[in-house]
Image (cartoon, rainbow, N blue to C red; front, top):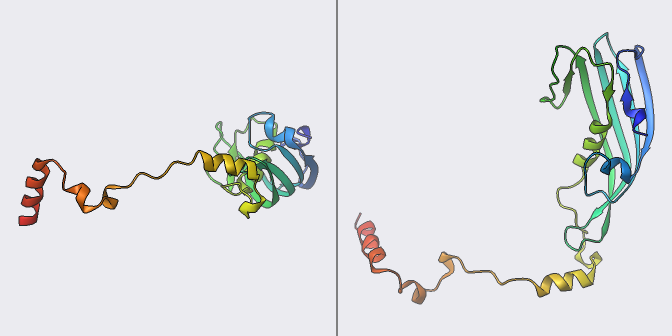
Length: 182
C-alpha cells in the first residue's frame, strides 16, 4: 500500500499515471501517532509528468475515518471526501515545501514519497473538533462523569458586587481619585 505511493519520478514516463490504493488505520499510525482509530479510505493519485523536471499530483480521497469524540471519547466516524492538487518541480539541492501549491524537491531525488502528502490531505480535511453533532449521541456514562467533575466558574473582577469592591486597599482608592480628577 505505502510502496504504491513511492513515485519513481526520474524514470516516470511522460503523461498521466493513475495509482489507486486503499488506506486503513495502520497507514495513519505507522510513522507518527494520530487520533485515527480506524480508517477505510480509497485514494486515487493521478501523477502527470509534464516535462523533464515538472510533475502534477492530483490526490482524491474518499471514505471514512474513526476518531475519538472530544466530548465522550467514544468512536466517531467522520466522512472523508477531499481533493488536493500539487505541482512538483525538481530543481536545486534543497527541499522547499513553503508553498501549498508547489513542492520543490532536489534535482538528485530519484523517488518522491507521496504517502505524507496523502496522510496530511486526509488529516487536514477532518474538522478541528471531533464531537457528535447531537450530545444525545455521546456516551451518557462519560457525560455523567464529566458533569460530576465540573467546577463552578470563578467570577471575574467585573462580576463582583459593589460590597466586595469596597474592601479594597486604600492606596487603590487614592489612585482612583487621581484618575477621576483628570
